[in-house]
Length: 362
Image (cartoon, rainbow, N blue to C red; front, side):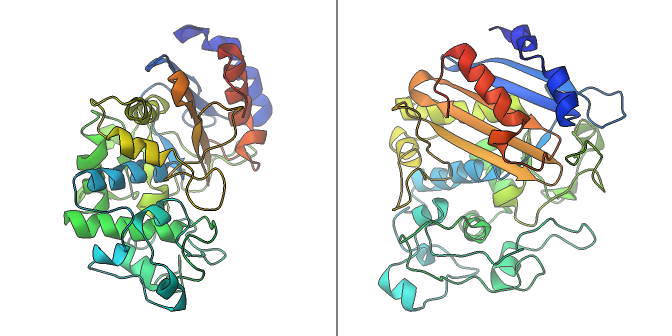
């Protein structure tokens, strides 16, 4: 299946049935991004097509990239993944209580959603765009409408899984404390620039590293749509926590990020991550099965596998990779289908490509 054989997916018909204006797909095979294709338009009713440079909102797939950045700091000796995170935090600290007296919160437990943080219902919803983006410290202190309760540990760390945007906000504050830079600037230095990515950024909808976004750079951004294919209000929604939901990228560049983990997992010294750190990232952590550091580890008939997925207002996406096969796929679309990735067009495409390449079906 070559680059233009993506037409075998017959996506145009499926997109019409699913009310999806635009979609992008990138496939990794034998250790390379073998092909990437795009279908549809940036905005429903418009004429400008989605192309390989079109940005999509990666939503919660941001967490995988944040994890790479954190592990880079571990690699540089600036962090210890298994030590009390309060050793490294300076602007805010995890409050001590009866739970932390039993076991301390670590970087690894935060990455794997096992830190004992339980996000309040309705927290970390989309940013309203009318006020400044809150700082990580404001979010952690409970001083915003996006997280009205101060973050504290509500169960013994490493005792159970609880998916937590607040936990990743702790990591966002940690990165800023250690580097002395804004989160987006630090992630550029740690991950994006070393990999030569030109269409990937953590974006708050307003600025990048203090400068207004170059309009030319941002004109090729896929607008968000609802499950009926209608443009969402404001076209592009943003979230208050960059570490958990602030990444904008292309399928091909997210595939390049994925490939970097694969290469490190295989033992390549050329990767920006050491092999042992990549392997820890793809090793089940804590009592909940299938949870790695910043990624998830599904059962794939005995074949090593990891995935990351995102779903926000106007967008949905997923990456699945098989490191021992040096293969994987990234699917991103500018529509929120109102159902899980496995039931939407995202899942359909992943299963179809998996059949073509004889990958396990997850």
